[in-house]
Length: 277
Image (cartoon, rainbow, N blue to C red; front, side, top):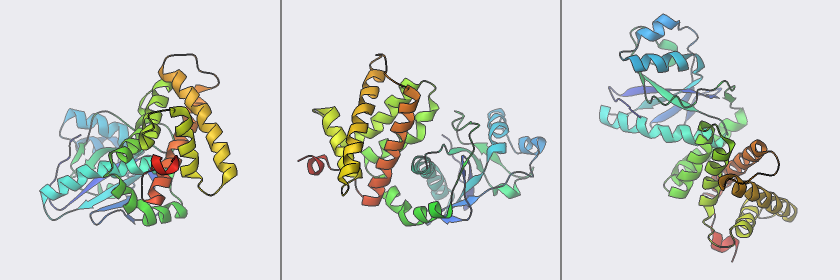
């Protein structure tokens, strides 16, 4: 990934998510709406100085739906905040179970991009190039961000939470369902760290973590996780998987999303010693 810091403001252009209003994520980063409908192909290409940038701009400019506005007091600080904003994009991807791409950097906001703008590719891996409709954030979603996003960012200091977020944000980058479920379960298992009687203890920990006050919900979740773990084990060990593996992928992704949400709400990672004394 390459990020350039010049001046005191820059924009990271995003696809995969739409926001109804400006949202302050940190002192230096805002998530705001974006509109590139005014741009024609020739104007977009004229903003690029490198052939690789042209390829990324051509692919992603039509898909831009939001942007990070990043401000700082110096170019060096600006580059640092812009680089770190990739984790904000991954967090949003994980929290809202969508794929937020962050492949373009601009020195002007999206609606003002012209032939005088400098557009650059932040990476050349074409992550987020999808036909899926962007996730439209509701007023309730905006409230959730305003209430909880700082706590989510704080949890990124913990490697287990980083891993979980990255797994959920990136599992779609793989085409094979066996690889997808392996990535998702790396995030799920990594949150708990069970090393013995893994299937039983992990199922119990997850059920108790997600439903501490609902016995019926705990029982249902316990049985669900056991079945999912069977699918996970068959998939990663190359065995025949019973049932629909693609469905198991989707249910596993929802499970990891719920675990991440619960961790943010609790402001802590699950403690296996407390959940299973």
